[in-house]
Length: 295
Image (cartoon, rainbow, N blue to C red; front, side, top):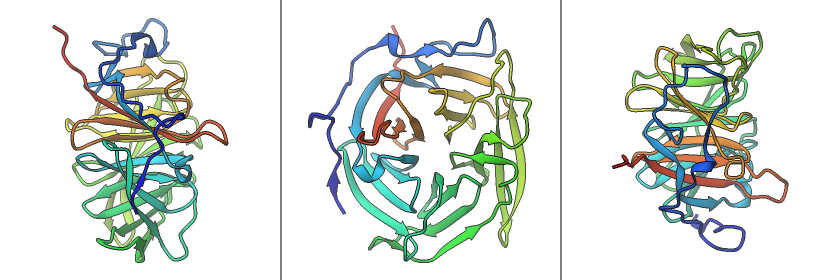
């Protein structure tokens, strides 16, 4: 399957390289606190979240886009949240270049995260269950899948999925079933065989923030920190492996009305996918690049 993404509401590609809109990103209000360690309010994990490189409208089937996963230079995987359908998007040219579905008939569920490791793709439901399969070299059907119950349903509602260099999945807890003491928590699952997992939890320190945050996606940086997108708060931040807040900024709600998906790509881009905020609105994919040092 090859299809062009809709190029904006009036048929135009939104390519905005060089546009500077300082008012579009502000420091997330938290009172006087030193827990935000950011040299610039436009920067998270070395990415400039003011200057958009491109904005693509997604096809109608991805109006409720839910997750992203990096594939290769210029390519990212995306999925929607009701069916196990996976789309390969060229975010440089604005095209859907491949589509797959899991199971026959296609599996259904509340899918809230996607991860890919080599050719093996995994979808996660909001109760933490994992469905995995090999992406075929030809055809669209992922016929053989494995389904793992991580037994996390009673602990959290999860959104977002990624993997660490040390072989564990990362699942951000969006809505804990019991009151937590931090900003939010990241759950780590390391497969031990036969559908079992070693589980650890990282509580992100609250610092000077009084309210909790609600993650919708996660990505792991090359240095081992975690970039987390917060849909309800329209925010994005970077957090260390020990739970410290390195940066936390609020996104412009006009640009990101319902941020759901996040990916750090192999060619050094940060992508954010937004659901269509209304029944007639398309989802969107926004491309950001690295921060350019100021002279």
